[in-house]
Length: 355
Image 1 (cartoon, helix red, strand yellow):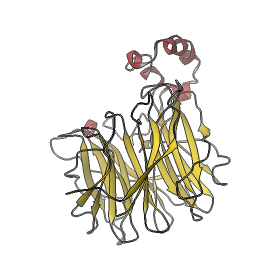
Image 2 (cartoon, helix red, strand yellow):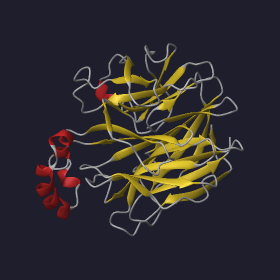
Image 3 (cartoon, helix red, strand yellow):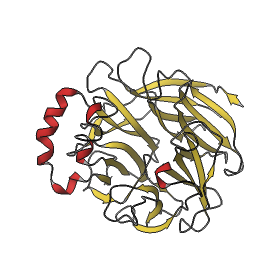
Image 4 (cartoon, one colour):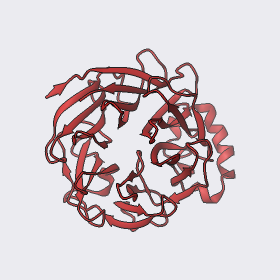
């Protein structure tokens, strides 16, 4: 059953007239003082662009207004899919990934603006060997995002990054990505944890592969801790449709149930446990009517109802990656990327809404 909630739409960052105005793949978190942090990949020419940078913007009024974005990462390669997590106090953890250098001179070459190709041909031979393979990374801020520590590489990636459990463990459910530390060449989905506030991560367990599927069918998971301590994971799937599969762990991420398909038409997923006990899963809908949606469970993810239509005015399928936090009054703010009708480039937008 579709439901149109009481809502307000707004802009986090929009610069549609600039050639480098394209923005995408955001995440949002909230610290103990109610400050919102939105991270995303910005200063891009398009969806496929080798020049993306990790950007961070803040809101001190529940998302009504946002600061001028600051650049957190501007590495040799395209910095994509920014995840952001509050670790308590002023500590933040940001994640992102880069494609291998030869992606833009080979596989995606035809999708790049022509003048950029000559630049890339000259640039990429100078990229240090340690960065050429691409990979997944994170770094930590101790002062609310004003400054950032060193960059650490991880073998897994997820667009919304890890989750903070109630006992302080940082739990990361991600897809193996361009890593020498990957368990196999299959690039499985696996869990890792940090018990020292994100300084180091250790391996936990792997999500099983459903019969008849390949690991190339599954990407971009997200995980939350339910009130009873169970971990609920949601995974982007490309078969049989662009949809979501669910898995759970009852032993802290060491073992996982066989993933099962949800009845939703969209992905990738983001999960949130509301103070009411409701579990909220948001996702982008990349078929008409294009937009952002959410489904809600009142039994810890066993059944889902009330498909909320947050946006149905998307111009095309290049949108989504919504992430949601609960505000102090119980309302919700969902941040995502989508093109405003009439604009040339995608922007970072938000919707404030209520269950």
